[in-house]
Length: 141
Length: 143
Image (cartoon, rainbow over all chains, first blue to last red; front, top):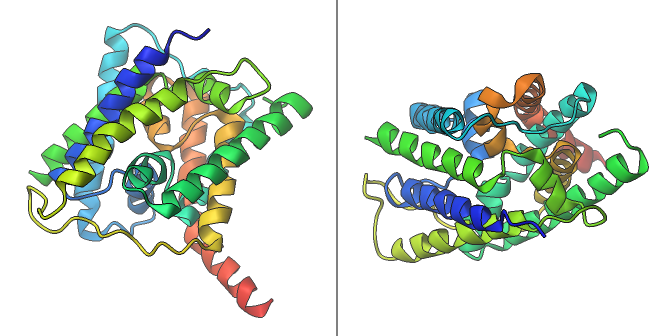
């Protein structure tokens, strides 16, 4: 039995509070792929700096915390080709779908958005099939 | 002010991702891997995050954002090809290595070479997405 679920709940609460701050104070939806993607492709317009500040916080706080709580790792596969392919899929897919786990999942489903539910069903379903294919059948990760 | 609160929100988001274990790709893959050592953590993270967000959405009713402007209206709820196809592509990549956009930035400082390769590839994919979208639209018109 995994005992980390309490940390999952606590960390999830922090993520939800982050989304609430960004919504109630800035009036924006906290979707990571939209915030990052619009800065990357230059479509953020006059929101560019606001989004750059968000990304700076997203990078800096875990960096500082990781020193405090000890060495961390993302425990990602060693297969750099798989990583590169996954990165491209995540980049294209989230921008095509206009959202990822944070935007469609957390922000969308919590306002009972149909699109949020549909996206979440498809990315979790595809993720499950991807694991079966690439881990259990092909063994590349 | 907008930058300050965006920075605070981003920082809380990153701290939450670290604390919850979502920057550990094994926990994400563990949730998706129903035939492996299944790990329910991600469901607790989603649930824990959706509760404050649901309260926040209720608070928005009849109000405006603290820093001015308007709250984002609910987008057109049509479920189209881009939503479904994009989510499938995203899910395939997410399952393959266990990282999505938020955690890829949050774990960049300790994610090693793999974390760097992932985020650069993701930037490439994001940059190419408008082209993919217009090609798909063109293919649909001629089909």
